Image 1 (tube, helix red, strand yellow):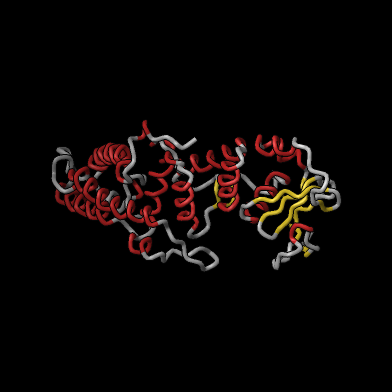
Image 2 (cartoon, rainbow, N blue to C red):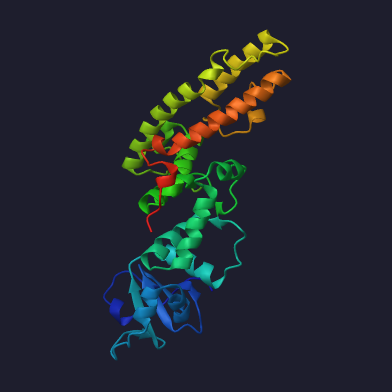
Length: 321
């Protein structure tokens, strides 16, 4: 049903803002949610089932003089109407989305799920965030092939970073913050130059910007230390190298690639070895030995990842419950 203006309820008769009826207006609904200037007619059971807060509230008898619409009591809320629309659409039409949920839906689930103690709603949203930005090395390497649980349109990864900081979903911060730095320049992040699909710019919270700026320096220093083996001959060329001159040149090219990265993929440590420029020209023996050293170094960088963002070690990094 399209959005339609409806006469304001008696509690809003003095308001200058017209109250509109949401497209979520169930004929059999027995309660009206009103937030901002939007009303939703829904079944109270759907809220009581998800939230003990609503379950307790709805169990209290309503005063006889309570304002109603078509006999339905009005519950006034103080959340974004869009969040409620997205959450209610998901609850009423759970099969409308494919496996991945749009970012805005996940964000609404986090915000409302946390506020109203909707455990299933909140847990589903945080599970999706954890899946995309995990806290184990093997899971991270596997999931980097592409997002499958959250649809992140341009710029929304920064919105997600703001969200996980605000709601202290700490165990996903290192990989998410890393990916933000990996795909955008620090200057772009500091100047709020990343745009969403609608053209609006994403602004990170000031404390997040400071954390990212500090992280870049820490990453560069640790990267230089752990990849020192590419800047000398301790590992490459191998003693059984087929062509020391050629493999030395390839090693030097590989070092430059690792240090500088490429556009859209600044830090290459978690990339497959064969995808990194400079590996293709190594002889078979050097490539095999180099790949082993590369994976070992990537594993060490992973262990340092939380510390880049001023967070505890992986084993101590917990979400706010």
